[in-house]
Image (cartoon, rainbow, N blue to C red):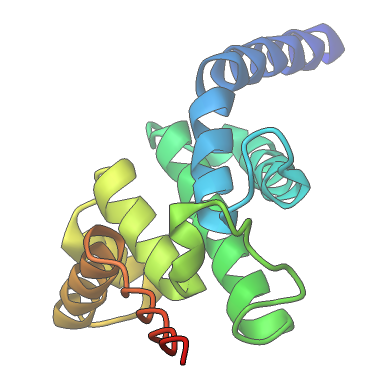
Length: 164
């Protein structure tokens, strides 16, 4: 009996390691987009990913045919939303990388935009995960997309006074 449990544990570890090897790069990129950090300096994204993967591993035996990537992505999004909105206020203690185009978006706009456009999650699924109406998700995604495609213009410089 003990040998059987050890064998199942080893199989579980191999399966999870294979999953992480295949999915961690994309999940890290998703986390980096959410935090709007620079790709080469993303400690917050790495922490989000580590916690999401730990939760996925803890529930590995209970997935029962569920897609582990979907589970890890949901945990990543939930952790991001929790840290951005509930724990530290609207922006958290973290300030997005000023060079990131996503830095102009609120955490909620980034989350919805990344889930919808980068991850390809359906509007209804995004709404259900975030506890928002689908119409609200559609509106926020549209607003975020508009902000990215048409950023606010810098004010024109003041005209110089003509020399007298």
